[in-house]
Length: 250
Length: 199
Image (tube, rainbow over all chains, first blue to last red; front, side, top):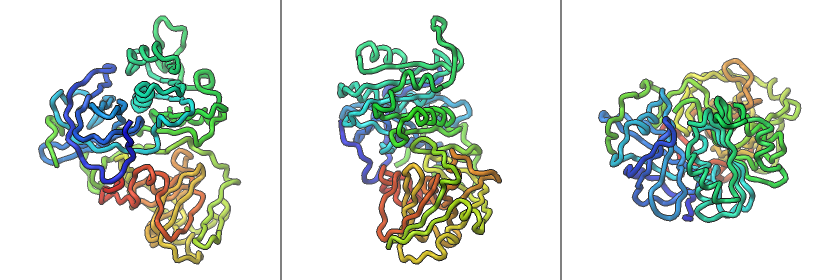
């Protein structure tokens, strides 16, 4: 994997949308061809800039969903926020062939490095799964032997991003476990009852604290606060818990 | 470089004066932290200034909150693009805390419970530009937002306003703190859009 430390000036690049797919009815992945992309680490994000005909601009940050293998496109996965200004444009207006300005990669803390030998616990709330999926994909790409566990909280079964790919990866890879948690409605054939992230879930499906796992927690603020507090209470070292929170707007 | 984004612009947010370039207005108070929120009991709270010669001056919570305070209304700008205007805080001015400190240091490193650090030039802490705040909007500062007390340096991006602050180290040479070492700008002026290294 390319070294992707942020260094020098982050210049705006003109990316071309070469593909897209719906992950759920409100979440869309955009495949972007970015000339001279310097590579990135899983967990990093980009800044994206839109310009209206009268010069008005809006900027937002989006996590990169794909792992970098030294070449090829990058992928962003965007959740439509109905009162948003940028996300509905990316989910509903952008078409293959359109161009988007972006710069990055940004962020050197919420990243997984393939050289870290520790087991990994990923805890996702909603579209917080995106940078964590990049970590799962990066581990897959280098056939990493670090055991990974993903605890993924969604509202309903229809809200699971990357559902097919996660099923396939779990089937083919003994080192990857995925536990889904439903906050509003569990699948019809499941004995699970809807609930929010709690001690029992993180205790049962996470790693024992003495394994020294690296924990990555990403999601809305309330979810991240709750999950990180529980991990600390369970005995995980606060410095091994990395968090990324969404604000209330986008 | 610049391109027009086909079909963009129909849903823009209200345009307001007071917004630095690339920022948008929010009425919420989003949270940005690198890790879990530490809970610091007030009887274990302290704030310590360490000079470049190693001399230390410390305040307990009781001593700190007995210092003269100021109520300020300021705009805050987060590097993640949100800005919040007209926020009201109560805190102790850094002028007050640094008043009797014997130093010629040009730079400082702000330290927090939990190990977070951020670098700020000395000049940016003086002359009514920075506070250690312990009330927001008339209420005790929530732990999520940096309580019991956080730095407040509103003229720089908000990551410089370190949460859960517990110390200030006075240094002669500028050094990167936590986010700065991870690629963020050493200074962080929102009006110059100094988000990342090289901006």
